[in-house]
Amino acid sequence: MSISSTPEGDNKALRINIQGRFDFSAHQDFRRAYEDVDFTPQEYEVDMTETTYLDSSALGMLLLLRDHAGGDTATIKIVNCNEDVKKILVISNFEQLFTIQ
Image 1: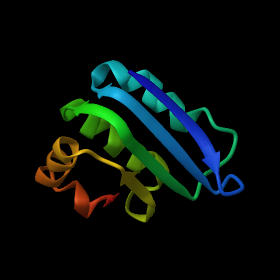
Image 2: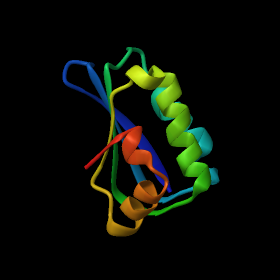
Image 3: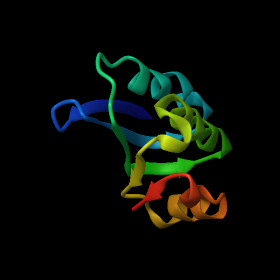
Image 4: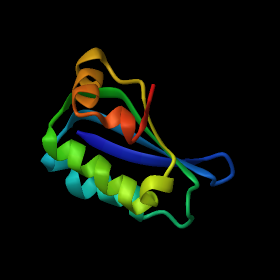
C-alpha cells in the first residue's frame, strides 16, 4: 500500500494516488496526503488506478476527506476505479457525495 499526493493546476488541485489495498492500515498515510500540504486546494482528485481493494474504513476515510475539504461545498473526484471498487462506491451511494469517473 502506498499513498502519495501531488499538487496540480498551480496548486488549485490536489491529486491523491492510492496503490494497493485501501483499508484501515492506510489511515495515517491518507490523512497526511491531504493535511500535510502547504496550500489550500480548491479541488481534490483521488486516483484509484492502482487500488486493488476498498473496505468500509476506506469509505470512512473518503468521508473525512470530504469534511476536511468543506463538506457539501467540496469538489472531490474519485477517478480510474476498477469495476470492483466502483461497485462498492455505487452500492454505498457515494456517487451522491462524490464525482465518480
